[in-house]
Amino acid sequence: MHTRHSESVSDPSPKARPKLVDRLHRALEALHLLLFHATDLETRRALVTCYRSLFDASYSSEEVVLNLRILKKRYALRMRKSDIFTLGEILHGGQYGVRSPLPSQPVILDAGANVGFSAAWFSALYEGAMVHCFEPEQENYRLLEANLEKLPGFVLNHCAVGQEEGLVSLRVADHGALHSVLDSEGNGPVQEVRQIALGNYLREQRLSQVDLLKLDVEGSELDALFGLGSEIEGVRVIIGELHRSAVDEHSFYEFLAQRGFRTVWTKDLPTEDEQEAVQLFEVANENASRADQTKPIRSPNAEP
Image (cartoon, rainbow, N blue to C red; front, side, top):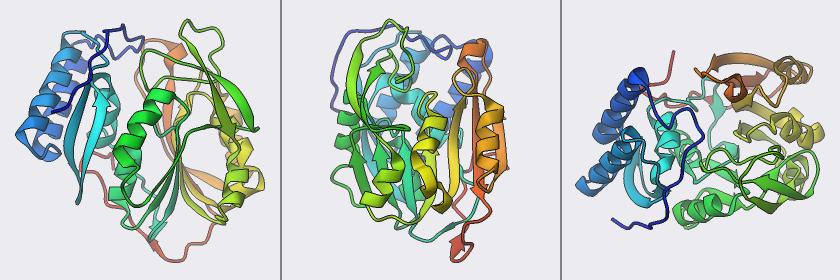
């Protein structure tokens, strides 16, 4: 097992010091990853250390490498111990268990790719998928490259997505999944990062159809959709997180409904702080072609 050590930091997320119910959830999550995804003893040991530090409220950015089985594929994924939150949400929680049918060999945009867990999940879920990843933060992108750069079926882009193109200020949070271009009042350091509009990207890549767009952009959800412009007509399905403290829920869904999207499902994540309120969602474009669609492989933990 390869590790990289750095100083411990405090996690602003309410998940950092889990209460009894959350501890039980995390214990079941750990058991699931150990039994169904870890491929060797070394990975199981590394997973145990990740969850032990979580239960001890000892948040560390020490890195581990996990050899994981995701459906029929195997990956060697490098991550920080704190990234266990994100890994568990995807592999155990079924956060991106897409319910809408997609065509074979789909084109997928992963906006807010973090270190590559969701991209690996989509690649395992849909055989022959081409996943275009977008991640602005330097350390996240370094890990994303380490995990996916040499594998087929991935296109990595070191940038944010938004309404306009240019340089933007990214506020870097302690937790790798919480960086935001909208947090102008935070205490963390700032990185100047490149931002692109997805509509321009699709035209440059000559992509006339996007079968799945995943959004986890920490409050920039509407800006990312605005950046699609008329290209949103070619998007079949969108799945992701809606951050209610930054985006008006009614305006978000009304914008999508006016462009032919219907809501497939939503789920409010539990939180004690309204400023942290997040809603998971999936919407499908009723105007998109229904030809050559296949049902995804469902996660065993995805809700019906």
